[in-house]
Length: 319
Image 1 (tube, helix red, strand yellow):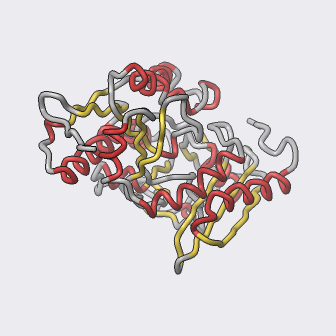
Image 2: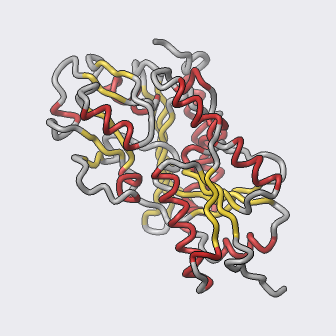
């Protein structure tokens, strides 16, 4: 079948949220598609879509995300636009995506993974170890909150939501002594001037799928599927098959502190996972190594092991 490529007169429409990081990810997708098919940027149209989550985030800036809703808050309007045919693909941060897609949509394209590590951000401290007793830490991530409190129950963790720029502004205003961002986001925004210290995954296991961009499409759009094959990164896909299977089997949501990382080591897949009580009082970790082809099965097996150790009520929220 001959592939009909987009043109400036009939562009491929790329849907995205409007934050600087979301736009950077959409531009990266456009650049990769443009290079793969030797097309001008004008053959791709970036369409910004404001989601319920974006609106609620501005209105309820000081409320924890778990009180506003689940991850679908930041994808619903974009996915509805794709189902209507208003856009052809949607570009997302994979760590923000539910495991299951709405009927008619497919998420099967991943760009090469960026730095998976968390970044410690402070204007006057160099690392987590420099935090004095009772220091104020700003984060909206239940995972980071639980991981920090597990190691340092003396810390005062406050809600710190918003895009990268908003959180950095709060930090400079003295709302907190430090905050945390993803190294991948800082790199994609070329924010080399931010006082960031990368945290080893051995010290703070990252969010599942951290550092990856995924592309969603309509299941019946075969032309788009064929185009996306040209920019799909196989190794990232192999790693995420394990991580997202772990997440799905744990029923992960914005209300669940879960961390996980799959890595390819000497031809084998190494999968690490962690679940924590929301208040940080307990952490359960697991590690498996096996065949790359068994990644999804490893993820499900690890989830079963973690849930068995955790027992009922483990994820119950405690303020």
